[in-house]
Amino acid sequence: MFAMVREGTSDPEKMARGRGQAEEFQRIRAQQPGYRGSVTVDAGNGRVLIVTLWETQEQAQAARATLEPEAERLLGPLWTAPAQVIASGPVLYNDVSQT
Image (cartoon, rainbow, N blue to C red):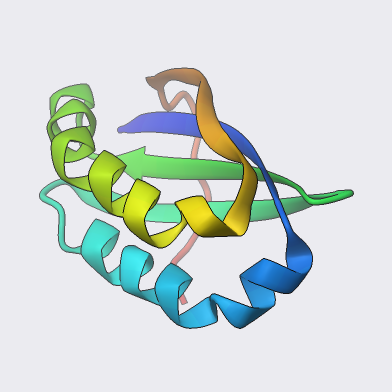
């Protein structure tokens, strides 16, 4: 398994109004080959950390061609600073279960 960690800054009011846009992006991301799930953490003061899991690094990289333009279109207006990849690599341990 492979993980990508992003950090961004959002406007909480815009995020609340743009909930449908965020849900649409989540649906598009979930349709990508190799997608295994994600965890979004509210780190306070509008700062958000997003951990996205993929079966392989190659699938994560291939998905970027679809996801980056969709993120800009759907999520870009909701962020005060676009989410940036701050780390990526093989998952060493995972005990998160799907509900």
